[in-house]
Length: 311
Ligand SMILES: Cc1cc2nc3c(=O)[nH]c(=O)nc-3n(C[C@H](O)[C@H](O)[C@H](O)COP(=O)(O)OP(=O)(O)OC[C@H]3O[C@@H](n4cnc5c(N)ncnc54)[C@H](O)[C@@H]3O)c2cc1C
Image 1: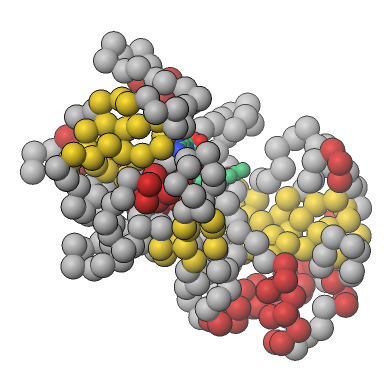
Image 2 (image 1 turned 90 degrees about the horizontal axis):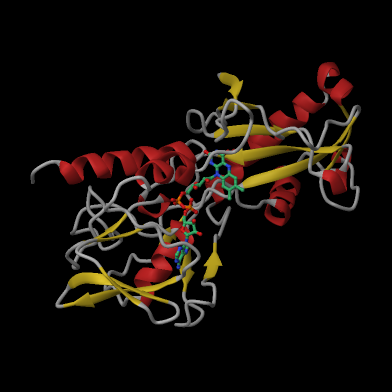
């Protein structure tokens, strides 16, 4: 079984501090005279006249006029903004994906400082069904309230399950309803079960036993040894414990105009509305087999480059 082990793709600088896209891109752009950054405001919807975006309306009713609008509110909120803007594409809010992650809680033989950054390494390997479709993410502390504990997260990086987001209300202050439907496709359960087996095997190795004195399958201290070996038992545990990996994507998917699930074209332009783009994780038609920060940056760089090129 092929396995890559390497440093985790953490968005941090050389001092170990987390670095956001705003730190890298926005701070430089702020210096430009034509850039004005308006903080701490909530966008309600895109204002559309004659099938053309003409600006945005904020939650407090303020209208900001614009020749072009780029919605970049992430895979949960970008489709919510488009839905509130009455964008007429059936794919808006559909196709939601995230990497299903099953947590094993580790009692560490030696606790790590909660002041250090938690993750440093990850392992990528295959279930045997698809290449590089599994990931193990060790986290060596869980914050001050859980000192002495860590996690081994078993993640499925190629997922077929899809969920959706829907508006709970037309009020922008009310969050949309999010249904991830993780593991709704049986093939995802099969592949992730292989990951659990590999994690279990590794945790039984003498070298990891020196680090992980006990391993639990839930928050109430049920030991890993209580998890049976049958496919049914592992699937039942996975269904009860699997969560998302904060890698939501796919709800304003890129694709051909003829594909009714597609919301944007190859450069992020929303079908049916001029001067309106989406540029964030929501445009991925399939969740990449990777942690999502860099893919989002790559998509944004590509869209920005192509924007400047003549048609
Ligand atoms: C805690 C955490 C840790 C992560 N760590 C990593 C990591 O180490 N490596 C990695 O590869 N990936 C990581 N990810 C995933 C990665 O950060 C995301 O995939 C990526 O940021 C998605 O980019 P985005 O532009 O789609 O959305 P976001 O980065 O979520 O940006 C959307 C922005 O829009 C704003 N917004 C939303 N709605 C509105 C509205 N109505 N009006 C105005 N503004 C709005 C939000 O406040 C947010 O600032 C992490 C995610 C989380 C949550």
